[in-house]
Image (cartoon, rainbow, N blue to C red; front, side):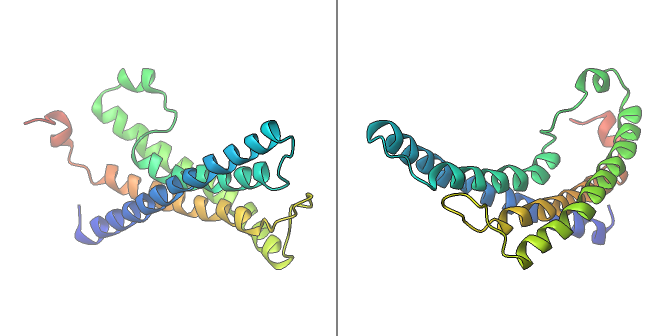
Length: 173
């Protein structure tokens, strides 16, 4: 792999790994918040106005920001039954066709979600619930995650494109 390509692939994957681990830390907030809400609701018959809503608001970025690195880990739903039957060369071709489709799909979603996130920020959008927190930051997680997904998909495409077929034929040799 050319050095500049390797640098790009490594930087994108490192960025998405950091986003993945950062998003993973949100679970340490989500679980106690839900616990507090459940205890308040059932033990004291006094549910919080904010507990479940905050947990849901945090779960969006938790889920979205982990996705790009999961693509690198090959953790998304895949058609493994079909791919197991393909040769290494056909599998590589399958990836080289599939990854641009992922990029195109993410680009379309990004083109729709970014203006909505910007409007949400500009209007200082809130949830209109009893608690009524700002929600622009949750909406901003959508285009951010899509941009990171596009970058990771591009990195994965380059990784496949520049992968040495000789190493695939003899992975342990």
